[in-house]
Amino acid sequence: MILSDRDIKQSITDGRIIVESNQKELFRYIHASSMDFRLGNTFKLYEHSKFAVLDPMNPESFAGNMRTITVADGDSFIVQPGEFVLGVTQEKITLPDDLVARVEGRSSLGRLGIIVHSTAGFVDPGFSGTITLEISNLNRLPVALYPGMRVCQLAFEKMTSAADTPYHSKPFSKYQGQVLPEESRLSIDPEFAKTAKELPLNQEVVVG
Image 1 (cartoon, rainbow, N blue to C red):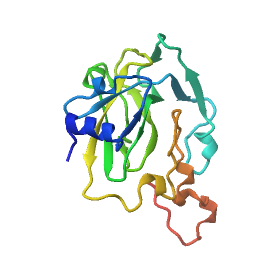
Image 2: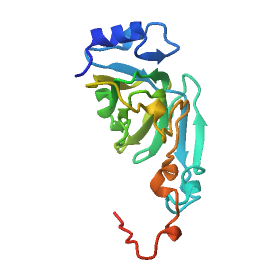
Image 3: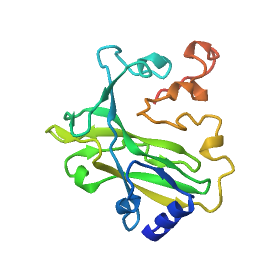
């Protein structure tokens, strides 16, 4: 069940959904079934010249392979055609244990070729932090993005019951409390805790 504008406003008023923002009039960003979030000032880009491949068995290939750029208010960040960058929302959100949120792009940006999440558009119950945006430009022309512009929208859904293990209690909640755009922490997942050299000799390795 997706929350309506009335229910989103009530959930924020009651403190069930907490949105931390430097904007005083939060309700102006709430629409019939979603709430707009704005683009932050910080971006991260992969340094293509340092590594030939992004390898979960080699965390430095992506965890230590990003350049951070901070854009001043009023200045633009140019996303080149085919480029992939990490951005972040200005707003920080905290969800209760019985609500999830879905991050969706804005249609006006989509019509310019800008995608704001490549796959991770799901915010777990119990999550608290800013939203890292996986920004891609599908256009053949560069597109300028500005800090403070409305860049995505969140729709909220009521769960059938509160989660037994919300995100803040999850053993591998890698992104709880994030503030800046966070690069992938895939290498600390349990399946990558051991290197390929430590696999049993008779264990089949499936690629794909």
